[in-house]
Length: 173
Image (cartoon, rainbow, N blue to C red):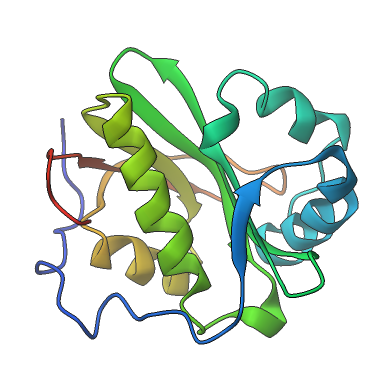
């Protein structure tokens, strides 16, 4: 595997903030579709058929995490899938613009890591737009490294990076 960028140093207490917002993690529900689709459109700049979310979450329901506010409205989510043996893939991951920098992404990510360890996955991969410096910094704090350049990967023709990390048993992140 070819590494394009180095991984950031190991975690510290300031890297993984505790959430300041009152959110509850739960599984995806069909009624979440419009909220998730709106977050995807704004944060990921993509538009998918709404039924896609439900169908992707059926294979591994515990891999589709939704962060809901005190009114049970989704404000962030992480959709993980299992397509390769011993490997999870973060297919979509985003937090609503008005709820960022509150530790919601950190809670989603660490919970997802726990669920991957429960299934004995050894590796996690994801894709990210090359222009999304904020997301790339977030992922490197969780020890993801760029392993490949994906030319014209996104629907608008933008390149993406494939990022990956090994998942060691017993480590917090």
